[in-house]
Image 1 (cartoon, rainbow, N blue to C red):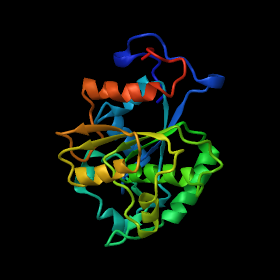
Image 2 (image 1 turned 30 degrees about the vertical axis):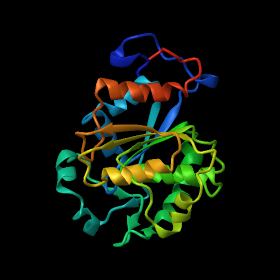
Image 3 (image 1 turned 45 degrees about the horizontal axis):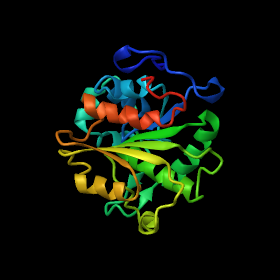
Length: 251
């Protein structure tokens, strides 16, 4: 679906285009054992998050992870996911953690895949990720800022993270232990007080690695793409406004 050229609630003057008349774009990364189409439904049918992003003037690209779950994997997909998104029959993983969470299997293949997708479908102004997708967006920002990956793509301007933790893989711990690189993109992080899959303390550890990150704490929210109340939706729009030159007050 294309962007709605209007302010909150569909009112207000149209959002002006960015430089070169190109609409700014966001790459949206889904959670573990779901898919791009499922994340799109989560954002638009089960919450108002996608609508907020579109009202801010962004086109959204929903990408499937490179690994499609096999029959055995599909048996482990949460029943609530299968029930809520019954029209979607395929599920994907960005990586699969070992039992002790210190090794992320197939992550190297995912990074190589994302390099290709950025080249083929990009460029993107920012990243949006939920759960495993948010952890991946966080890692992508770090790998780009430290020159380890995604160096052919323009620097991401910002990341939007929903209910996510930083990587627990052993190979990534030096990233979190070192001082954060100065060229990290700006970030806004949403996390819920009732989230058992990504508890508050895990979200806080991720936020510690993003100096100056905007924190949006939703005390009643659990592990889902949140429906934003007016105040929190306003904070998201205020955050996004800074990346739209000449767009002050237009949404």
